[in-house]
Image 1 (spheres, helix red, strand yellow):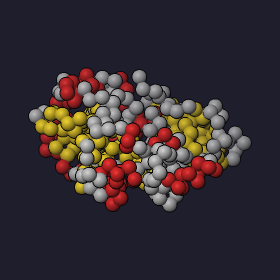
Image 2 (cartoon, rainbow, N blue to C red):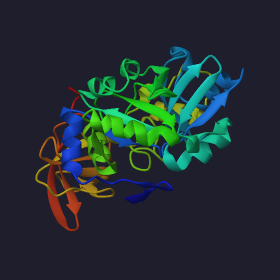
Image 3 (cartoon, rainbow, N blue to C red):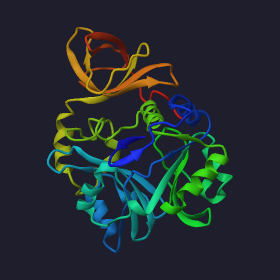
Image 4 (cartoon, rainbow, N blue to C red):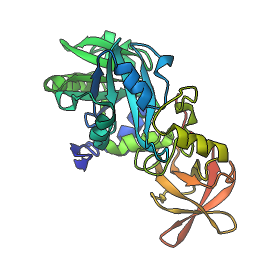
Length: 333
């Protein structure tokens, strides 16, 4: 167990991170992600409040759907938080910030913090829906990026076809006092419990950003390769003017994937060097890839650094050999 965003979180279970990672890539893993915030925003003005605050366009979806979006710093367009919005009903939304950002997001959009009332279990992997179906067929039937209120283990739960592993799966928000019962049923149905260690290696292989690493202060959606999250057609959202300025000149750095030889990882902050030996960027996340059998890294680098170029990474005075590669590192089956 480790402290994480004000919570005590499992880093790994007795099976170990490698087993948990493999379970998600080949079968079913279940993660306790109750540390994610939930802010309930409802009322006749709820849609307009969220549409004004966030980068993505809620009008592209409808009640019963989920959407990935960003809240930007209005001054420089950097990502204050990346968020999943669950559109529950016509005037009701559950906004899901990162663990430590719930208060900041709520200060912008209002609403009520319901985080302490529920637990969230993420069931992920190519057989995740088959596993969930043994516990709740209705929950297993909730489609990708869809949201539904479903009876699970005799209680009303919100279920969404979302996740953070690069695999198919669902997330179940259940009243906190019922969560242990649901977890035990999922384990009995064949799910492997997985902790933060596997969640990080899985999301890194899928090139999914982590706030505080690929997103955060000074890092904009354009730099992170996430322009698709920005609805330029919307006349107003926080940070829009700053992003327009950056788009007109082009970002000074962009996210790149680097495949690294061997098992020695290049951690956050490692300097990336060109073939000529000049610094061209720095690593934002790096780890050993259990699926690929060698290390990988995400790095914010000069836009001139192209796919296929060889680089070196300065790890405590030793140069690791790497090559810029296409993302994601591992594609969903």
